[in-house]
Picture 1: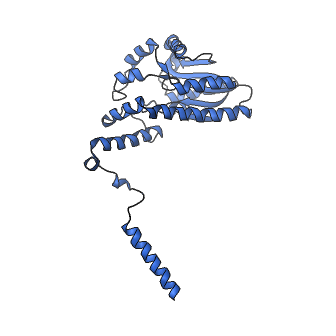
Picture 2 (picture 1 turned 90 degrees about the vertical axis):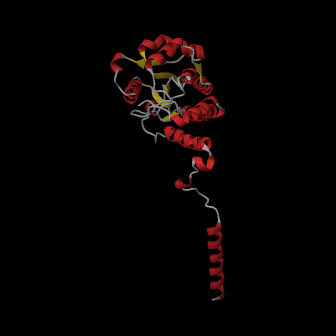
Picture 3 (picture 1 turned 180 degrees about the horizontal axis):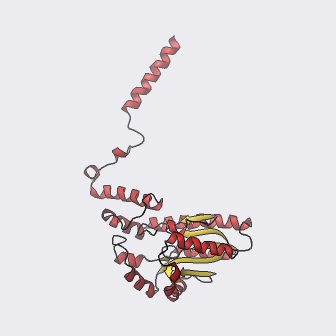
Length: 261
């Protein structure tokens, strides 16, 4: 009986301690508001969560960055976090590529597919002028920027690109840009330091009206029909990566500025 009473007393002490303690996990309703944290802190918290929902595709289709997140997106794109996130994605890609290549998984024609915009090339100067995604996409002004052909390389992507070539991968570039932009795209890729790709695939007249998922899936199927084994696929949009056939591994790069279906 004495032992039971001691156990009950200890349990009661634990209940009292827990009742007086701060909760370890916040509930959704406990998220601080602008009143308690100040507007800038609340916006920063919301925008970090919004960006996560974009990268995980929980946000679904969206047209513009929320007005309250313009400054946050700019800070992310211009700061160390974007570069770090991109570098981690590249490092994970290379680790997989080296293992897969060493195991002979790719057969005679191991291939890696890259998107172009916000994957190999950074259009940050264009989006800086257009509000970092606060404005809806303007095809006319973006095409004019493409024609300039001066977008810089994403450093971590250029490094990955060169390392994959060194391993022996066939590099295939699959972009939503138009065939009419081939010369400007090739010039820009060379300007940014990319070279010796196997193929540069752009949208043809027959691709007008197709979603990116349909268009890129069809092109991946054509690659496989030619004998390529697509071990990896890198893109900043989920529409670069999903749809059958898919690569053995797909790697999503960060992009909180725009959405392509």
